[in-house]
Image 1: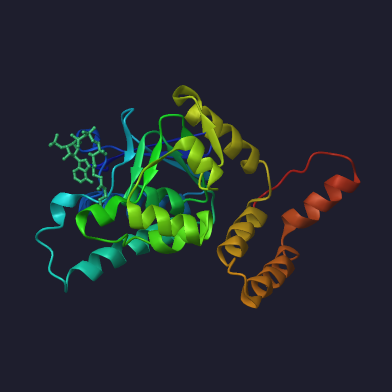
Image 2: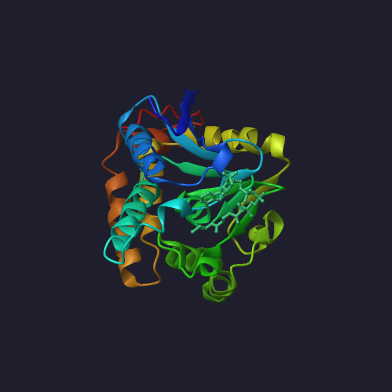
Length: 257
Ligand code: COA
């Protein structure tokens, strides 16, 4: 079904593996088209409750946008390439189901931006993060200047993006980019463990958490969205079930309604 991805779903968790290992899983037009379709399927398919994005092979998550597509681009065409990437990554960020990046090697340029668009990131000990676009006379174009500044803070983002230097998994955790660092063989099992925990919660509430936190911007608007979404939870059967189950000292049986 996909030329550039391996996709499989097990126990509600859809694992999307970017599969161009000979090019360190670089993101070309075809990967974006495939990823766009795979994320649509995550939204649409009721059997999918959450997703993982990872890279094939043991060297790279994604080593960036495919640089071989850059030289033919005109200044008029380049913004459309950035917009296309941003649209696909926004779709990941706005997914009502959790999508976690399992970073298993280089996450550079568009790879770092892809990981940042996921709801959170787990990384293997050999992972490396960086925005090396300045080495090519470029800047990040798939949301990196915004999301890295939001996640790691303005000053860390300034240093990483201006210098193009790579940081390791532990440093990325200190920066707030990575939630957990694991040995390589434990990466996917650890992400699945956390997603299984989340899948036990009320799906509508989980979707609203994503929506609220995506509106996190230090302004009143974020708080107002939270008030609205909090109110909307009270329209759901799951909220009544969750509160009742607590009071009745039993496990909640959520239906996603
Ligand atoms: N775009 C296109 N091809 C890429 C790529 C990218 N972003 N990153 C790696 N590749 C290709 C290489 O060209 C090479 O292909 P080849 O075997 O046909 O020559 C293959 O993947 C393996 O990469 P290689 O550079 O030989 O591996 P390495 O272990 O020596 O170095 C990196 C690994 C990640 C340090 C290096 O590949 C690199 O710097 N990549 C570019 C990172 C980048 O600038 N990303 C931002 C793009 S905007």
